[in-house]
Image (cartoon, rainbow, N blue to C red; front, side):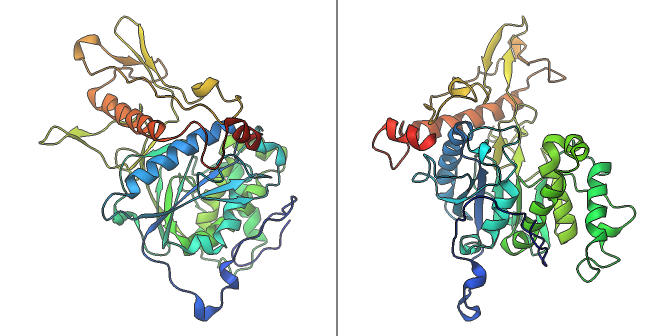
Length: 397
């Protein structure tokens, strides 16, 4: 384990080192405050499934960064992988060696090294290019440029509400309490909110969230430390399951004192998740207006008519032949969802209750599919930097 400092600790890195210019190595008189802007940071283990999503995400970023006056000024893929992959030339990337090398291809928890990589990246000069960082996932798409109002002052941040996060999750609260028993009071005073007998975990996760780059340098190492603490004993690991990375982030921001303003759709200024969410209401011009600038295609929407005939489907897990195909995937356009027709009784799969598909929900699905298809149209079959598909495939191995 690493040694704890004022910003948490770095769990041991077992792979070969990858070094970058660190902010702490820049002489104090040469350091400059970063400009007021937003640095989008995407994390990935570089497997083929995440990489087709990454190509699409980055293409949508580039499109909306061109919006006049946009605060989108930088993009970095933080790659936690043991070697370079097929996107090193196409997507701005900084690679950090993982502790779990098996995740280079596939493993049961591909985000296991995400927090450690973010902790390492947060210390680099690359992380100081903008005043704020926007953490995103591979399966997000930008649909417009973000408003400057999300750029909060130090100690404040904007996050997304995940209702499945339990504010009183007993296993995570135990991990937090055990951490605090070994933490000096000069770092987390007796009256610190994390030490309250009635402490509650924020119902959020690292993505999407927007915080200052200064705050990230404090939060990210703590996040990595809490991830390591949730790995043992096995009972804790199993109890938190896939959510342990999110719970670790929640504990980190609580200890760091970075207050996240959180909301789910439609109130969230960050993200919506079709088809669970909708595009709001139409304005006087007949256009739908909604807050989110990111759409997340976590759900696999299926659209049926009133007679249960399946009309349309999009599931990221089946795209390109499925999650276990070799990369790079051939990117193909998605079929357009059906047009709105109230007489057809359009509905979603039974997972969603109520099943009725509204005009507004369908509009948000269409906006998302249009963005993905525009990205696919703009991307070459062979990722940038490779002369042939064979060369790209070798890099993807």
